[in-house]
Image (tube, rainbow, N blue to C red):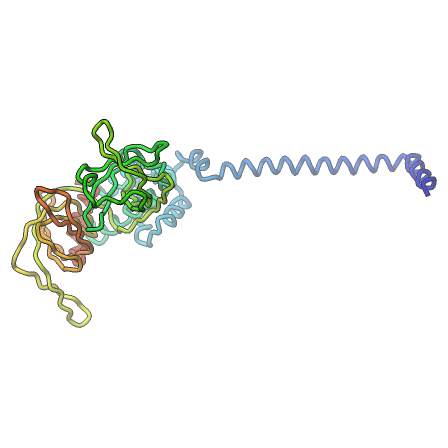
Length: 366
């Protein structure tokens, strides 16, 4: 059998056509391999160029196309009217690639500023102005989602936290640093000396709002408390913490301090509608922030959540405005000299013109 096999090999070698055929087959195979490798490299480069960051960097200065608008509209979950306004803005002002632009806070603001001034000059009706502000908020929220903080170590030093103790009293804490000890948080001396602080080794939650406007909750554990040589009182928390985004608000908020007045309200249901009976007696308060959806103010009266209020206030030289609201939360202030109750109010009945004036103030257009 081996002898026969050897003879067959010799027969193949004696046939010159066989070698040519084999070389041709090998050549074809090599060509296929080289071609496939080349195509693979080309596809890899195309995929790399199509990655979001690379694609945006390459195309950031190109004018906005309909495809870019559609992608942003989908990202921001725009309705038909909001998308129409966005398309009109891009057609009128011809901005560079919108998908890149929404990552640039200043550039996107400039675009909306131009649109606002154009709509104001054209004396657009209140409904269109309201849609414009709702569009801007959705774009802001989409922008925040693209720059979301992914873990506790990415929180910037100096970030202000809000901590609520068991008595619903709010405290302002500050991120001092993150080092080998863990998350080092500066706390008020009053909290440090009190029994309201979270106990060592216990879990606690602080909330904060990033510069992009996205709200977060940080769940961590107290390691220990210390008074540093500098006189600073600190809380050292575990670096093994859970950070979650919690965007609950549906409108942009701006901090300011202005006096306000409020009175009680009795809701009266009539058929399918609700009317509000406003009490005559007015009380003084101090407003600390506002949005088109609600506000926060303090007063000296311990009003529980679940109550209806009529709130009156002015913004600059505009007003007074009147809004019916509902207390969603009542917390205690931290000022020992002037103890106050902080009311977190959700607006229920607000005139569209007042809503647009608040939005104008919040976005600092006037």
